[in-house]
Length: 271
Image (tube, rainbow, N blue to C red; front, side, top):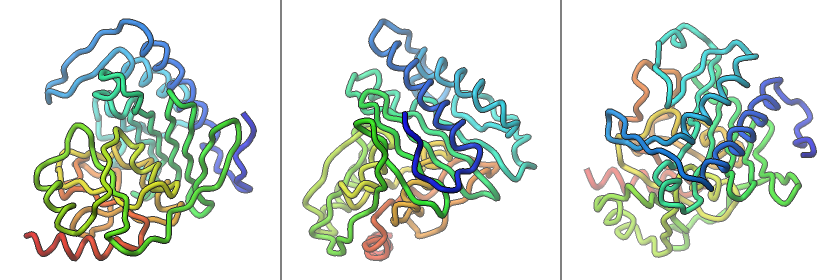
């Protein structure tokens, strides 16, 4: 794999890419065989692949000595006193993994002073990587080459391509998307939604759920910001990371930036 074209890489970047790729390869091996599925205390599914990916990522990231907040580990809260931490989702889209849609990812983010400064998302089935580094842009690796990626310049809501969750789309979200005049809607799994917007293949992702947690968005936040887009909650608040409570309470809005305020304004009218 040739080097990502960032002139001033932070040292953690190559480590995060290595962790995401090796975890992705391990996930694929399990994906193609029989595997065990368990149910966690919050009723969400977890598989051998989540656990194996988590183990590999922990091993590789541990060389940096930063605390790791991972979906699959007990949160010991030591991280709260640290300025720099990793936030990891070893397998984002477990339901898609189980349903064999191929739409699952590995997400790794480096947080500094409560903001993501590095985001790596691996899409194992397609051998694609998305990477963002603060102030240096967003990139996609596919077909054995890196390319810089950007959001679109579409500013009319009626022309916006919107993507939403395959497994968690609520009636409220469906009604809202229709109400604001968006006709082009597609469901897709995991953090690939943000990958698509960052690559200029869609303009908006809207979710009103309070079930999203910091590891669901940290890597994506860096990617979309560096691609020229925007991510806030549905009330327009800035997102912060490495909080005591890891839930995003007010949904998530991801856009190309140009339509962000329009969607927030329309959402306020619903309340």
